[in-house]
Length: 465
Ligand SMILES: NC(=O)C1=CN([C@@H]2O[C@H](COP(=O)(O)OP(=O)(O)OC[C@H]3O[C@@H](n4cnc5c(N)ncnc54)[C@H](OP(=O)(O)O)[C@@H]3O)[C@@H](O)[C@H]2O)C=CC1
Ligand SMILES: O=C(O)CCCC(=O)O
Image (cartoon, rainbow, N blue to C red):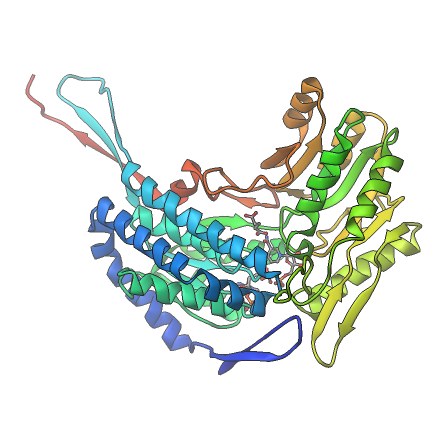
């Protein structure tokens, strides 16, 4: 395992900090500590766990500006988005601080007078999390908060591109009074740490946000010890704009969905299907707005689109755009880059493509970049078939003012998260997650704590009549 991880600023390529990578022994030790502290933490009463989570949230808010700056420097996202992410991250802690107090059990009527059946919930044990670089704060807290609320202990490995935000959050958790062994961070390379996590006898649950191929590996490797798994994987979100849609709203919300974090979110609009009767108006209005988006270093005032995370991400975006153009796509704006492979920064200007078709890679694969391909449809059924024609099933969006169309689309789209006239559906109080190869389980809402709980029932006999 490498001794250090170099964290660089994707806007400049400059080194921000070298982070010590944990050795195999140190990671095993962290897992053992997490396991050993489980008994005490799981027996700490729910109101006390809730109190400590609230203190953690407060500490994070006190350090909001520092955290946002760190996040922008290591991930590239514009500062206003990082500030928003700090709030989003704490909203999960606040929500689960309350849910900790609501882990109710139940009784079941027995089939004889001399018995009682009681069902209770208990935490699964030590949870190991692997998180991505695109939301270095929120993806961690939306796993850690329900885990700690449920009474689990928690070890996280952040993405090597963005460990600093996570390390700061863990430090603040300890300052808030959450015991050091109850929530820990280890650093290292994904494949190496992943193997240690999945093989460990101490880890009872793996929770992951990242690409579908890595998710599949983690599911496979977790089988040998039958761990619980929660997977929040890739997406390929369709946006369907029906003939009766409010076009201005559809344009505004599609931009909000597509260009957040330079298009690097798993629920970003990835392909836009517009009814053929309105495609010209939609494309013209959209392009006019997209051209106004300001590209630059996320720390500079007014920046709306930062750099993409790294060369690998950049290459994938460029190859999808080139493939689409070579197969007949028309560029309405963008297809412009400011990249320096030696220095290590990669900016992609927001790009709108028209006349795309199903044979292009961009219509089949997750893009993770600020590229918006537009295609058309005639009948709703055709739009649904195109939308559902990928292995992904995370988020989908549609725009219509006709309730019949809305209900039809809602019922026929095979996606876990649906935005109807809404390009920003995420919320701590709602269940986020995907169908098909987009994942297993839900994060957020009352559903988001379930994966951290086991159900146990007690059957008591010999009761006096
Ligand atoms: N659902 C989502 O939100 C995300 C989707 N993606 C998709 O994946 C594409 C590639 O991005 P990339 O960053 O490479 O995504 P990865 O899935 O490779 O990375 C996400 C996390 O998984 C870790 N990881 C990588 N390989 C393994 C492994 N074999 N076992 C265990 N953990 C591992 C990474 O660690 P390390 O950093 O050390 O490699 C990181 O912490 C993106 O273009 C996008 O399409 C990416 C990130 C988030
Ligand atoms: O890209 C992701 O993995 C998370 C999307 C952020 C959100 O809206 O919760």
